[in-house]
Length: 244
Image (cartoon, rainbow, N blue to C red; front, side, top):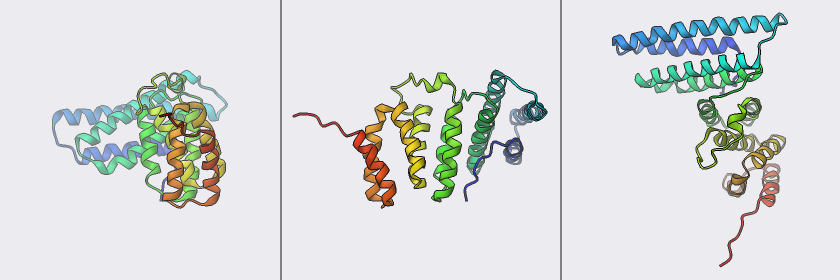
């Protein structure tokens, strides 16, 4: 069963501590590794204090600037990167799902507190990993809502999408995965929303996506209402035939 990310601070802290504990348990026992763990533990403690204070201020009617939330969120994602590196050094591949959940929850926390997501790659990769862990249409529908929130909070520097030549850029990965998850949810309204975003933000990918989507309709025997939406967008983005 998929754990739908909530963006709750308690989950962020619990996952961070669990990953750090796993690293300690499998420590190669070198001085440098131990020092890294101490630094990570201290950094997580500081992050905890700051994020807790922000939530407390907001609950009491206070406010934090978008720039402050963005900066704190960026720091949290840097710590996620450090935790990821620590698990890689110890070959703790079993921590990948928890690391993915942590990245998404941090992104949601940023989004729900009015900040911008400036480091997108680990978040986009995490969403792809989570999506592939489930075939349940209801769960995938809930994940679509999470992706929508994250897309809305992505920094304008990233969403302007100036690096068109890189097919692996996180922004493209995120939007295409959004459409894939919406399709797999079998929810025509979610498909319409995701396909509209894809058509608007990635027009250079639309024709191929909807063409391949029609192929999947046949290969995987999607329900008629799902096929109907895919056919609609396939007609709007036909494959261009070259003259010979």
